[in-house]
Length: 321
Image 1 (cartoon, helix red, strand yellow):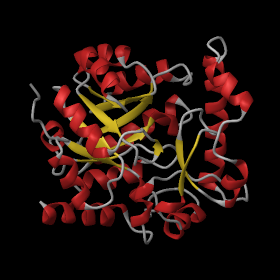
Image 2: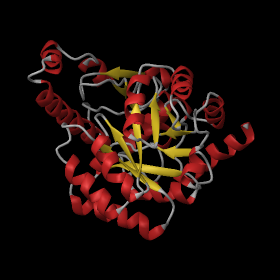
Image 3: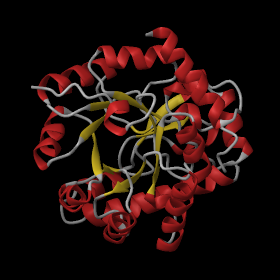
Image 4: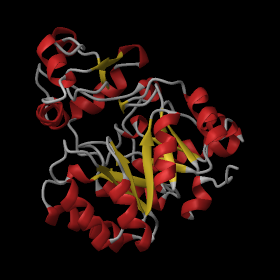
């Protein structure tokens, strides 16, 4: 039987909203602003190049607030820093870890005795049942309207399928831009929502002005899925360069991704190459620019402070309930 725990009750926050960890975008300024506004937030461990930088980021947030925040951890072999990052997170302590792209078994086993919650990204019921069996505290249901690595199932279908078959909370990820989107997700059974795209063009984000302006200039119709960058489907803005590059993996890339003997190494190479491409785009603009975003880009109309974006979202949520 499903436990009706909402995200705000689970973490002791004001609203059932998680500001999603965004590769190269999330930073401590954004996290602190989100926490001060009554929601929770997370950042990717890979946003920090060294262990010292990761520890300093966590210490910076903790020095400003005691509100709960989390860190996203890539738990497969494409992340050579996985083991050391997990060790650091268990040593310094965070409220929760969001696992992606691999088995969370080790993360759950190490975190449970320490009181660190583990939320696991899932895209379907099969994997949700696996991580529930391993002891996950919640699943983050990544649907087909998510930014970044998106799933294939619609928000309503995925939420309803998971809540009907899992006993742990389901946090919906993808397609949330307004308060009514949160109300809809929770009416389908979600415990809360993970929201990313609408926060990309915030004042606190240290990305290029061109990236922020692209969030305003482009809309939902301009979002496409590409398998060229990471080996998995990644949602990006369909700029002229992306159109020239193409969005489908070429024959060699397909062979590397589907050959059992080469797959592990291919994913590492493709992921590293893709991250470098996205990194260059995030902090500088050239013709060869690839910007990640989800369909919620349709609702980004200006560059605003993090606190203002959160306030708009939470006010809409209260009024829509």
